Amino acid sequence: MAGHPGNAEPLSPRAKLAVTAGKAAAAVSRAAGRGSGSVIGGRVALKLDPDLLGRLAQHLDVILVSATNGKTTTTRLIAEALRASGPVVSNALGANMPAGITSALAGGSDAKYGVIEVDEKYLAGVARDVEPKAIALLNLSRDQLDRAAETRMLAEKWREGLSGTKAVVVANADDPLIVWAASSSANVVWVAAGQEWKDDAWSCPACGGVMQRPGDDWFCGECGFRRPAPSWALSGDYVLDPHGSAWPIHLQLPGRANKANAATSAAVAAVFGVPPQVALERMYQVQAVAGRYDVVNFQDRELRLLLAKNPAGWLETFSLIDPPPTPVILSVNARGADGTDTSWLWDVDYTRLAGHPIFVIGDRRLDLAVRLEVAGLDFRVCETVDEAVQLAPPGRIELIANYTAFQDVRRRVGN
Image 1 (tube, rainbow, N blue to C red):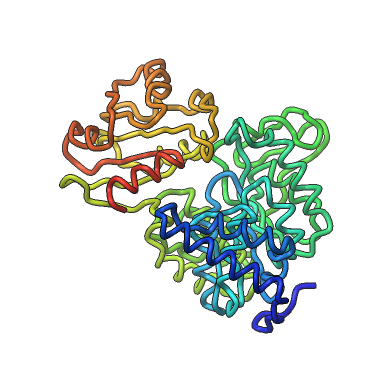
Image 2: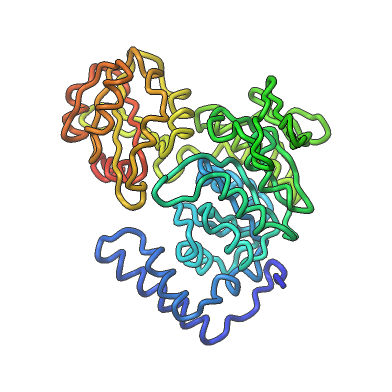
């Protein structure tokens, strides 16, 4: 059983050794310039004590956050909201598999809450290990086609893995795959957070029938599976709580998707007694998340750094960039962390960039160039971000990149 916050039971000698060895491995990795070291540190620690993750979580109220898009930002917003009620430990930089999560929790012995982002594939296993008090489920869409299961299969794994959980599941009522995954849980709080990308949810996850989508509603005409009535909702610039009160959203982060993340975060915070007004005001402190949305100066130009890793993420990002003639740099890689299959580029509606001067960089710039040519867009292929910035017309530049391309750009522009 999970312990009580603040009453951390002493770690066993084996667990202490594992934590110490993990921190040492992380320090060596950092000293060698190989990043934060959280993943290698966690791997070493789990090798020495395979049950360490559960031991580190036993004194915490754990909140897990999983989705295809928005989980890093939502994790950060929930963490900020819950700090109104006590100290928080979190994997804020997005190391979201068991090794990275273990490293994060190893630094949280004095915390009350553990707010943990979890990779979709690992959600059920991590939930089994850490016995969370709440789980936030935001969305499911196609991503990393060479690595991840098809979305319906992933939803089924979540459904099986979360069956019987004692956690309060805070779930997006507008995504049929999320509703299917969460419906096996006994205690679900439904949030109307919206769903702009619908291409992965036209068939019913329960029976395979065709989903009907009148307005904001959805239902299966064959088996009766339908959208549940939400108790929380995003309504413009407000969050509606279960009592019908409207609370203004205070965010420095741009776009409708982040307002949806804030609505879900407010619902999670309420599970732990933090009022919506307090939660939403604390979220205003977040200006950027692991470099995302940062505006940096590079070569006497302003660049806004935006991360988009899959079709749903690109769609949301297009909705928040400044209008034409704002120049846009696009960067796509296909390394291990991105998924090596770039066929998803054909699912993105790049015609939304019509009118923008477009510059293409990254390992897979030629793949992206073919896609933009088919979309009928004007663009220039560049070797480096330096060249793209030099060629871009005046004004702030929007730079949109997938995962490792984003890290490459951050290193180059000094962010």
